[in-house]
Image (cartoon, rainbow, N blue to C red; front, side, top):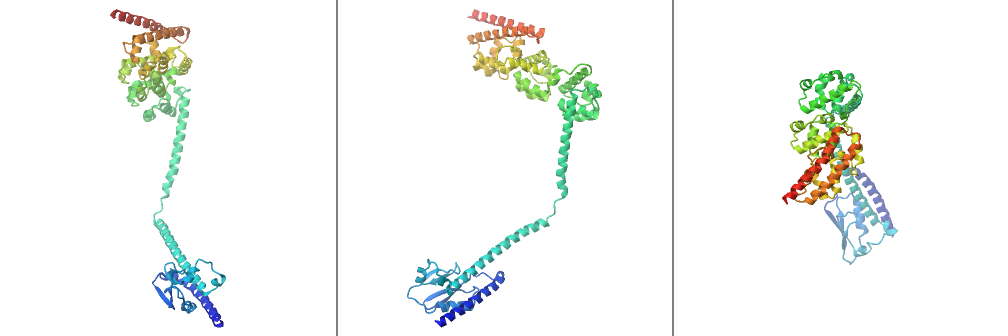
Length: 473
């Protein structure tokens, strides 16, 4: 027993030396090759222990493994299990140790030389894993360093490229300030005589108020004050400013004439408040002809131009050849003339009759469609879309009788009872309209004459048609 204890102490001393040698060997690990090499069996009696040839174990450790298990033979067959030292190398152990493999180690087992040997192998395996991880980290860091090195080798961006951002910002700010200044000057032109305008005010008026920026360059080069602008003739506008479009030239000329009159004690006309955007969208929708919106927008037709249009202008310049549409537009213009182009007054009158069947002169096409639905002809109401049927047409056009409205609605000619119903409703509407017109102070004598003729001709026309129908029957 004393000899065995002495031997154990010697083995412990050798294990201590082996650990120190392992610590020294780890410094040279990057220079060593992988430990995964063919194994070298060591036979002790009937047991076979598989040793790893290239593991950094000293000869004393190998000898200790042989001595520890020498003479402890057994008749049981060896069972092959995976070595705890290395997962890739199998080891041969007895059935007894296999049976005890799942038990937890006792303190005596932990202090045994065998346990120390396996712990040493596990420590070496952990060291190998750490070396592999460090190698991967070095490779990763190396690849990253190469990326940064390439980045450093590239030419640096020109700082002037970033200066463009500041210049663009400053340019946008200057453009915004210039636009704001132009809007302010355009607002001043509404209450200032044209003769007092400077070049900046002339340009702001042409671009913002008139909506004609396409002629801004020619104007800035030739017109330096409002006095010069007041003296321009139609020929000057065409030859000097290059305004060849006839409606554009008319628009500018009518505006200059309006400002000439305002040089005295007069104010600008109410038509000056109706810009071409309102005409092309709201007004055309009210008269029931929104299909001409793009045409009016292109020709920049505003309130002053509307007041000057006739049948020839509509056909020659605006390409509106339909006679019914021409009549609808001109009667819509006549309504504006009746209310002196006062948009607010017109809207106020329309609001009052929105839900009552009175004052049909100011009805929009949408209000006429609503009235058709109210008199139980809703199946035909949608046929009035895009036909230009509005209140001024009903009130001011003597030729637009019951048959004309029935035709616009798409009521068949053989539906005599529907025609009779429509006639009675139009008669009631005309009587109501006539009484409204007589009690109103805004109507002129011309409109009253048209209203009276409206109602009388409706009755005469329908009575004549009715008698002819009865004669044929």
